[in-house]
Length: 423
Image (spheres, rainbow, N blue to C red):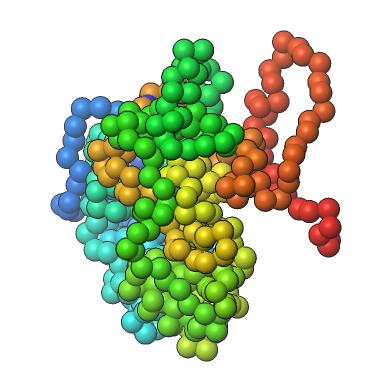
C-alpha cells in the first residue's frame, strides 16, 4: 500500500540514467553490453499482473561484472562506486547471477577463501529471480519482502538487463513522497491523522510528526494494529556481538551464522558497528590480512543507538533520515539489546501483505524527482538520533511573498558539529 500510493505520484515515466535510474534499455545497453546481446536466459521471474509497472519504482542503474572476474575485482569495483551488489554477466552476455556484500562475507570471508583467487561464480547467487520493467510493481515488491530479497534484477521486455531494485531505496523513496505530500493534507486528513496517532502507540512531538507521515497508512495496511516496538521484534533473536580485538575472519563467521551486522561491545558498552558492506569495501577490497586485523581498526565507531521501546514507525523514519541500513538497539543504561535492519522492520511488522498495501498507497501521491536528500525537519524527542546534537533550531524571519518557498531549492541535509568540537 505504501509503495503503490507513492508510485501514483509520479507524473513522468522516463528517468535519467545519470540520476541512478533507468531511461531506456537502448541507452543502457550501449554502455554495458559485453556481447551483441544481453538477453536473459530462462529463469525465475515475477508473474505479471495488472497495476503500476516496475518502472514506477525507479530501478537503480546496475553495476555489472563478468563471470570470469575474481571476487577481489568485483569487491573493489563496488567499493569504488559505493555499491552493495553487482549483476554478473556470463560469457554469452546473459545474466548469470548476482553478488552482494552479504555473499562476500558469508561465502568467501567466513569460509576462508582467497578473494584474489576465487572466481565470482563460486560465491554469487546463480540464476536469480528477475522482474521486467513492465511487470507489476506490487508483485515485485511482494516477492522481495516474502523472500527477504534486498536486491532484485530488472530486465526490459527483450530480456536485457537494465536495472536493479533495492528495497531500501524503494522505502526511502516512498517516505520522501509522503514528506512532500504532507503540506498538501486537508484539515479532514489532519483530523484523521490525530485519530491514528493513538493506534500506532507513539508519543510526543516526534511521534506526532512520524505518525502524520506513516501512521494512517500503516494502520490501514496492518488492520489498525499498533505499530510494534523494536523490543518485540528483537525478542528471541540473536545479536552478533564481538569485542574490539576480534579479528575480521572470526567476525565474518559470527556475522554469517546470525546473518546480522556485528556490534562491537567493550566492557558492556557499544563502541562500534560493522556491516556486510564494510566487510567488502573496508577489508576485502583493500586486501587486509583478515586473520590479523582487529575489528576495531575498521569498524564505524560510536554508532547512534535507539531505545528498544521505539516503534517501527519511528525506526523507519530514523533509517530514512540518516540513510542507515541498520540500527543498534540499547537500553537506557547502555545494555545492548541487538540490531534491526531495514528488512527486519519491513518483514517484522506485517509481512508482504501489509507492506504491499503501504507501498500501494504511497505510489499514488504525485511526482517525485528522486532526490537522495531527506527532509530538513527533525523532532526534539530524545528518541530521535538526530536530536542528540542540538536542542533547538531557529531561522531568520523572512517577509512573506508570493514567490516559491526555500523548500523548492531542496536544501541538503546538514552535517552537524558542536561548538566545543576541534577543527
